[in-house]
Image (tube, rainbow over all chains, first blue to last red; front, side):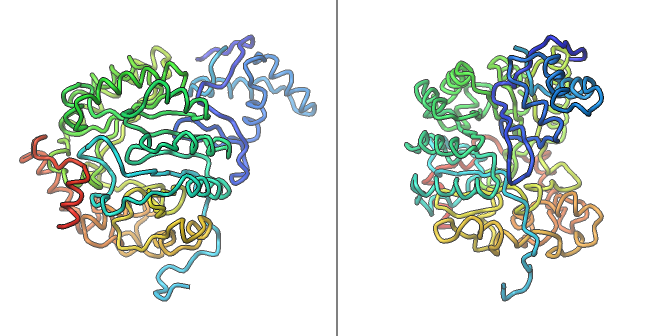
Length: 92
Length: 383
């Protein structure tokens, strides 16, 4: 997946679970026999991934949440590219 | 705290046991000759009760465990499996069922799904029905596995297919991968046999040659490229046998660093094989998991680097591989403190070279293997 479509509505791939882990002090992505520790920005993005919101809407919502941040599009697009490439996400 | 004073407990708390493996039982309908269970498993037929297991899950979750594997033996022989899965899911674990598929039914797949089970891993012995059934010691195993792999996917689970590869099936790796893709596996583990437990007994019949291994890796790489070109989500994981390496594996990512294994009778181990070591490991029936993980002698024995003799002690790579595997050092050199003999710096490395030579010159056939069953385990116990 090299080109990300802003209209695309991502959801977590079946068998992937996003949750807060107090012992690790971070959000993680759990999947069959594996786990990825996520940084804060990845966690903020994944909180909005629910299969109902497009990538464009996710960017807009984050921009509202973080009004003092510069344009967040690139950050979100780079994350989406990685997440699709690793098959964490799929399109609805 | 310990009279020997060998390994003072660090004041810093160890990192949490992120991975909990619950070996629910040693009972299993199959007889795979490379099973990682201890060869003397018949010594202990005692199993923790449902309530004891659930208490273990609660304690492990409180310590930070996030992944929980239900394993064995064959975990499906536990009639309370669904109840255990349900309890683990309610605690927030990601739950993995590691099964041979024998004993699974469509109804049970549905019931486990209802209970919240996240993922099912099915192990195969070969992609060929005859070889599979011969290795499994069961005439019906292969057809059952195929049916259950399809049922698992039909229920929408993610699925890992696991093939233990060895000299008698590794040349069919192309066929193995093809079967996995056809069954729509999400992950495929092509795990070259590691020589612990029963596999150690049968090493001369199982260890592939270097040529076989090189070819299998090339075939796997070819499939990876093919899958990538199709943007196919299936991931192929190839586990090389350390017998062909010059440096040891970072076993368990370090002793007592993230992996906690609870055996059927409640003995807590830092890896599946550690029971064979001359260490008195703690039991969940007499100690809390917090004590076991943080304070017990067994879990601190090989933490850190202070225990290391040479050549590990002064080695620049010790923080990468922790001196390798303690069980392998014990099995092959007689002392678990030694460097893993896989390492070419080990003065015992010749035992690895000799095993490679045997694989090349004088391998044993399938019919020379000792199959894993209770009768054989009792014979081994009697010596």
